[in-house]
Length: 136
Image (tube, rainbow, N blue to C red):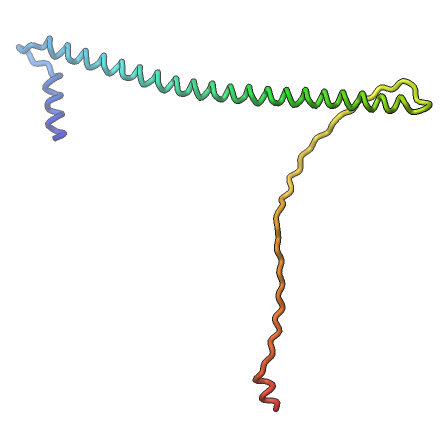
């Protein structure tokens, strides 16, 4: 079956002297044009998928960066509030003049594995009744 199809294709595209070769050339040109258009469409579809994936990654990065900026601003606001409160408290102490306060944070993370460990111990004491019978 495959051999028959190969023969038909060869006959369609083979040029023979004395026959109407114009029609075969037109068929060949149409086939090549369809092939080129198909390749361009496939390329456009694949590139749009890659572009969408890249846009999604960029959007995710932007969202994460925004969250980091917001958290940093929140920490700065909290730090400023704590500095102001500490400054007010220290200035109220008798004998202390004007005070400047600077708070810095150090942050570290430590991962500790937490698990439940059940330990059970059972002691079994066995006595040999046969040994007692022998002794008697």
